[in-house]
Image (cartoon, rainbow, N blue to C red; front, side, top):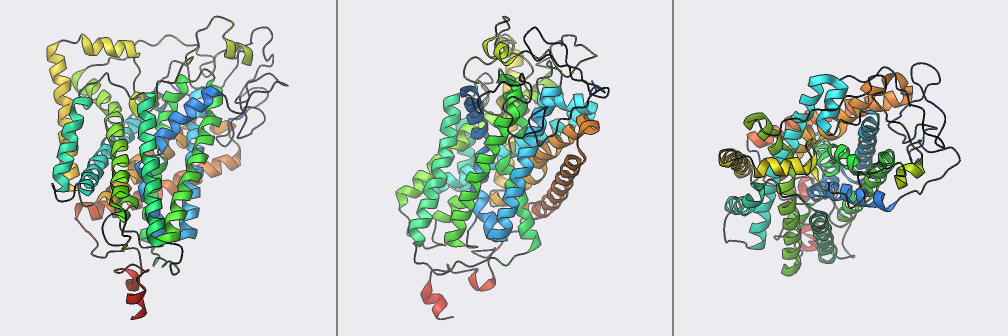
Amino acid sequence: MVPPASVRVSSPPAGAWAESLTMGAGRSVHFPFLSVALKPPSLFAADGGLTTPGTTMPFFTLEDFKISFSFFCTVYGIGTLGLPANFARSGAPIATVALLFMGFANVCSCVAISRVCLAAPKNLKTYGDIGEWCCGKIGRYLVLLAQFGVCLLVPCAYLVLGGILLDGISPGAFGTQYWSIIMAAMLLPVIVTPTLKEGAYAAFAGCMGTVLADAIAISVLAVGVGNDHPPVPHPDIKFSEAASSFGNLALAYSAAVLVPALQREHSQPERMPRVVACTMIFAACCFLIIGETSYSYVGCQIPGNLLFAINGTALNLNANRGAVVLAYMFMQLHITIAMSVILNPVLYILERGVLGMHKRPLLPAIDEESPAFEVISTPQTRLGEKEGTPNVATGRPSVTSMADAEHDLTPEALLHEYHNSGPVVIAKYVTLRICVVVILLILAIIFKDHFMDFSDFVGAWAVSLACIILPIFFYLKVFWNRTPWYEKIIGAFIIVVCACLGAYVTYTTGHDLFLDIVSDKTFQYCPDEYSEVVYTNTTYYGNN
C-alpha cells in the first residue's frame, strides 16, 4: 500500500459537518505534525479539527486521562536514572537545552505518528503496518529492526541493572552476574506464558516503583549533602561527554512506538495528538526536575546513575540503609514488571518468522479512492454511538505497554492459537522464548560493568530510530505536498540532528562496550581536582 495522492472526506450524515475537504484539488488542508487540528492548525485542538464549527469539546476527558496515564507509565522508566549523569556530563545550561530539545523532538514524533495513524486506512493496526503503508516493505523492515533493538536490548539492560540492584540490596551474597541469572530464572515462568498481559494495575505499580525510587534517591541526596554545602563543582565539558547524553535522553523519552496501539483503544482517535503531546510535555517537566535537583546538590560528582550515587561511600552521604534498600526494591519492582512485557513484541515477531505462527488475518477491502479517512461523524455520534457502531474503547484501555505493539490478531484469536496449537508447537515456542532469555542473559553478564554505556548505546540507535526518526520521516513522506515549509525544515532538522548524534554516540559507546573500557576515576565527569574526593570534604580541599 502507498499513501494516497489525494484525501477526500465523504459526505457526512445529516447534522454532521457538511463541508467536504479535498487535497490536491480544491482547497488544500495540511496536517502539520506541530499541530493537532485540520483547521486551523493548533497544537491543542481537542478534536483534531474534526468537530462541527461552533461546537466545543472538553480539553481532557476521562478516556483521555486513562490513555495518557497508560502512555506515561511507558515513558517513565529506567531512563530517569541517567538524567543526573547527563547534567554531570554537560553542566546545567547545556543539559537543560538538550533535555528540552529532546522533549520537543519526542512531542513532534509522537504527534507525527498519531497524525499518520489518523490518515492511514483503518485496517492498519500496528507500527509495522504504518511503516509498510508509508514506505513499502522497507518501511516495515526498518520498523521491525528498530523494535528488535528496543525490545531485545532494553530487557538486557534490565538484567544488568537488576543484578546491580539485587547486589546492592544483599551485598556480598552473590556477584552481580549471579543475581542477573537469578532474576532471569525468576522471570522465566512469566516470559514463557504468552497470554499474560500487563494490566492497568501492574502498569501503575511499575510506574510508581520508578517514581518512588527516584523520590527516595533524591531525598537521600538532599539530606546527605544538606543545604550548607560549598558551591557544587562543574564538569570539564567535552563534546564526547555532552553528546553521550543523547542516548540516555532518547531512552528516557521512548514511547512513540506505542502510539498506534494506544490510538486503537481510543473511541475518538482524533484526540490522540493532544493526549500524547500533553503527556510528553508533563514527562519532560518531571525529567527536568530530577536533573536540576540532583545537579544542585552534587554537580558533576555523580558516580554512575542516580541509584548508584546513594549507595556506597563515594559521596559520603551516610545514607540510611533502609532508604537505600527501599529505593533499590522499588526500581527492581519496575524492571521486573517491565522486562516481561517489553519482550512481548519481539517474541511475537520471532514466533511468526521462525515458527510460522500468528498468520496475518485477511484484511477487508478498502475504498481506494479514500483510503485515509472514514466518514466523519459528528462529535455527538462518536461519543454516544447513536448509529449503533460499537465503541472500541468503552472500558479501561487494555494496552498499557509495548505488549501489543505488533499484535495484529485479536486477543481471542491469540488465546485460541496458543491454547490449541498442540504440544509440539507449544514446546517450540517455549524453547524459543527460553533461548531468547539465555542470549540476553549472556549479553547482560558480558556488559555487567557497563550499564550506563549500554543504556546510552541502546538509546542512541534503537530508540532514536524507532521513536524519533521514523515517525517524523513517515509524517513528512505522507504529507510532504501539504506540509508548510517551516515544518519541513523543523522535521528535517530533527531527523538530521538525531541521526548524526545517534551515529556518533553509537560508535563511542560501542567502542567502550566492546573494548571493555572503564574509567578509573570516582567522578569521571569532573575536572581532575574534583575527580576523586567529594566536594563537601572541606578538610581535604582546605589542605589542597
